[in-house]
Length: 165
Image (cartoon, rainbow, N blue to C red):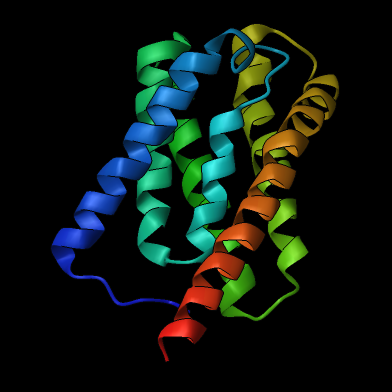
């Protein structure tokens, strides 16, 4: 199902990915930052399942959203970038290593859920473990939505590929 894209198409899709992430963050920023976060935009990490070129845009989208909306400085921007890249990489690894599709839920919950509190607990002076629990609970919403998004897109594109052949 993985389609080959030209460099121009990859650049365009990457820019669209980043733009969607930032727009979703702008619309949901009231509950996407701080101790209790539900980052609906991280649903888009699931799209890396289809193409690895979306891994770096996942990190860049997180960097820009933390720059525009976060207000916690360079540590949050760099930490979020790393978390986005690692999460999207592991989502792609689910496909690459032919793991069950439901496994893509795990990195979307646990990489941000554990990775972000490593630095956010220090920045906000909040105990690490309660922050991990809070973020993992918040990340389960985009993780499951991401899984269903992948299911729907795969079904749609697989079906259309069969009809064309």
